[in-house]
Image (cartoon, rainbow, N blue to C red):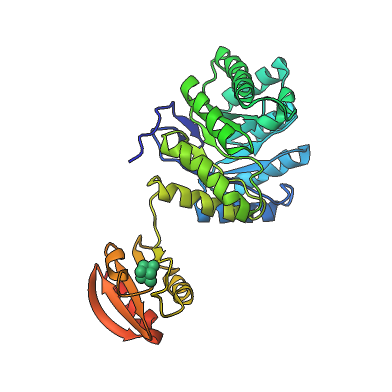
Length: 352
Ligand code: SF4
């Protein structure tokens, strides 16, 4: 079991972030914020998929105006993603954001930051300080060595956090992102050692879903396994539901998320396999899709090693030529023709 790093608890609406709470999945909407109906629909889809917080970008005044309406129509705390404008930050706070995200590389004037802190305090809104490697001017040159990059990101975070603490504001979540896996791991370790605040984990510009999945999983997995990370966002170019799916899989793999649907285990197949296991597994996947129990269902390619390797599955189908051997809790319960495998599986599932 993973021992989480002890942090302060930060409340984002009704959602707690920090070591006293479970790791929170979040994602971002990817439709124009001013298209309120589409935005609300996407927020609701993300919540249904497992997000407990949703972030929305508010680059223009029209977006903060739309944000105020979206807040009224959804049932999840919303985070406003602010870039360059302190006015947008204050508008978003007043519009009902539960948290705002600020990038120290983009809002630098002390008087602007203090204005935002005061508004956030008054409205009990949390703030994420999100340092981004690409926004630090001194780090734009390729030649800057890795240690210097980490040191500069940490320095920027320290300066920003100090301003907030001097103003007695501690409802902070911190993040430091890079598109480089090792640098993101490194800087987050430093932040975890330096500050008591919860950490938001993510890897920026991770790529298309098929390219983003592995770097994100390696980065977030390594840090979460060390107990670092209290809320996560997987960034992929494309549908944010993909982000949520990957984030959930990472947390499930680490035992940080309770599964509520079946887990499908499929053997990798080898020369012993006598039927099309991928085709059979796809049929099983479809058959169990709507079950809302955390069952383990295995599809194995042979009866030599299959039954042993699937011994901890609730139900296993071990395939032989034209036949399917059905196991429930490690015990063989029937042998059926391959074409009747799904029917037999569903019959056994009803008994669990
Ligand atoms: S379960 Fe059987 S078919 Fe599948 S990989 Fe193992 S030995 Fe090969």
